[in-house]
Length: 226
Image 1 (tube, rainbow, N blue to C red):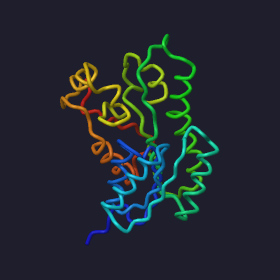
Image 2: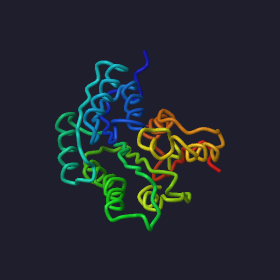
Image 3: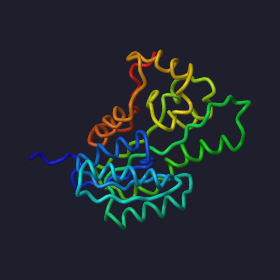
């Protein structure tokens, strides 16, 4: 029997409760990884752990409810992960928020702070706390957005906090792209003629985590956006 690619490895995943984070967690579990699953939504996080355990029984996973924008909470979470698993091999930063698009004139201080604190500061908080525990050969993969490299109406603040998946059909962006012309416009500008699926992003994440000579690269997963 072939040994799973990530057998015996400890991987920290933020935003693991749904969408890309959940899809990636399940695929990593199937490949033998032991996961430190984190999210602000504890109920949905438990559902992810159940799915991971069902797909690949016998792995040891831990659950950590945390707001990544809270630096002290992130420090405590990483310490708990290391205490539980003994070490940390990889980090996948997937936590993020994607609220209703707003123009600059519609943007309030609260709206700005939400996106910056979660999408930008949150990723930094996890990297700062987690990287000291990584060993040689470890990988850190951060999810960003195509909005960071291509103009999108009403997405100025979001774009400022992000920069590579394209339009992916997840619960996070459901309110933004489902039920109207926005969904049609998103699919129309993609060469494949459809939105991406979380599993398709997860496949690339798994590849990046095991690709030792890919370093400091931005990989666009967008179906061929025009």
